[in-house]
Image (cartoon, rainbow, N blue to C red; front, side, top):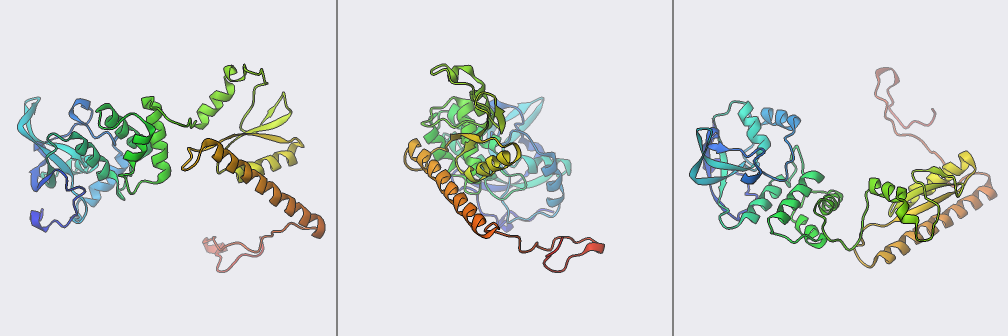
Length: 330
């Protein structure tokens, strides 16, 4: 049995556009699943059945301190297939599906009015998913939302505008935001000051003969392949991964006695220029090389490396091999 509306203790996701909180019959609510003209929630590319199944259990004992599903009123009603709907679902698609499968007749919804302000409706759909939900916003969902914002003319089609928009999302990891903006830029053909390529695009760039015509240099390789022209192993290295690829080069040399070369690419600079980032990455390699020189000197002087294994954490919980202390011997 549903509580009285005044017993709901949730905090509103956004006060902008909020009208009231009501008990509403589910069959009065229009759910725009694939109807793009009806402003389907662009942050959800598809429903997660796993999430729906979890919600079916959770909603049998609801927590009314959590955000409610959100609808907007259809003033004159909307008739589809002989059925008239008086509300339009804006946010809470997974919960609505779970409630429907649970054969729930009525639920409590927050009612909003976005008349004259469709951008606020789109923002609220993103904010509704910007929490600690069972199915968090993902790269594709955020990119879809950004594309919707641009297509409606609410934000300009620039990298700067897309980056500014995603900052309203407080619980999405910075890497997810960056990847979503990059995907949106690719989908939209938005202008960007710095070209950032995915690993697939980097491989395509290396494999395109047009990128070698200016000085007729031999084609490069990637992913630790042996370059037949240079007799070196080739690696593409993204800024921040210098440590990993120095070690890859060491292991490859130890295995095959051939050196490596790096094709480097930097991230979009947060401050400074692209060349500033390149110099920082170059200095990172230099510092690693100096550290290796020091380690080899220590090895030559002492006969051992300047590191050792002290012990292992206890991790084995099997009955016959249960570990109760640090593991010093294996």
